[in-house]
Image (cartoon, rainbow, N blue to C red; front, side, top):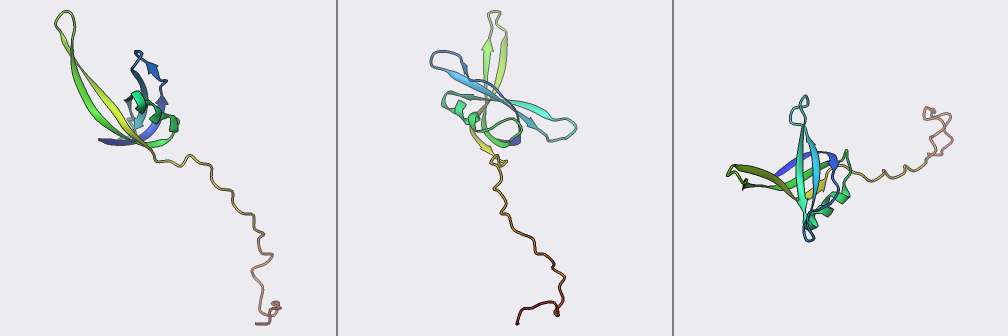
Length: 121
């Protein structure tokens, strides 16, 4: 699945256990401009570095898998959790600084007549 939106927030890497780490990314998704949605995505292990290349305000396309799992507490009540697990992140905005424009001198007068023109042809 994919979604396009604007980076709202990038979480810090969380070292959950000695061998497991994760990181959150919040995307502002605007299907209806009056009611933007803020969607939390999660990257785990080596995918946490995907978020290093973007910053808040960047337009991105997030490729993710939708995952779900049940969890039963001690009282026997089952709760269901969903996770949006990122596997690719593509920046859509150009974050590079624009190239410097060459400096050209403007012509002195473009409204010259044929009599004033001293060119032989």
